[in-house]
Length: 57
Image (cartoon, rainbow, N blue to C red; front, side, top):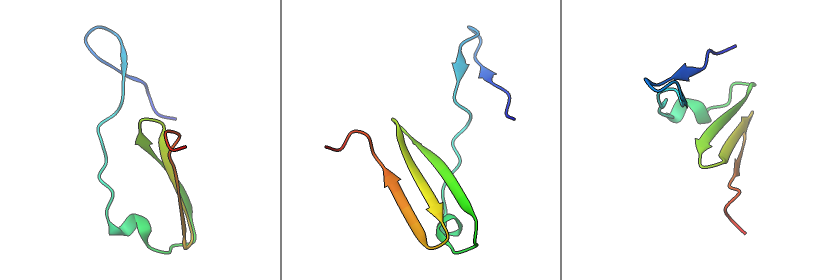
C-alpha cells in the first residue's frame, strides 16, 4: 500500500507523474489500470486498451 504524500500545509498531494511509454501498450498478459487525471483512466489488458473519460457525453 502506498503512503499518502502531504505538502507543507499537511494537505494530501498526488505523487509525481510517471510517463507512459510504448512498453505500457505491449502485450504481456497482464492487466494494468492507469489514472490519467481529471477523472480519466486507461485500462490495459492483453491486447485491449480501454480509455474512460467521464467528461465525454
